[in-house]
Length: 84
Image (cartoon, rainbow, N blue to C red; front, side):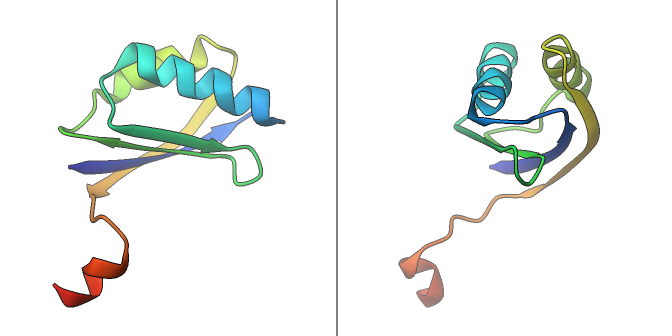
């Protein structure tokens, strides 16, 4: 699994977060997506690496601007993780 973090310019409220999340879900298959307008960030978890251009195009079509994209292997957080 891959965790991709995007810095996004233009999110001002929870409706902005919802617009971004919907655009991401329509553009690529995701396990999880969440956005924060206070952090200016969207985080998604996918099975495979994402097509960055498709992701940028989908988000920017909604009127927001993708400032940066970074990806890393996803490690599930939680109580059981301390025993591994």
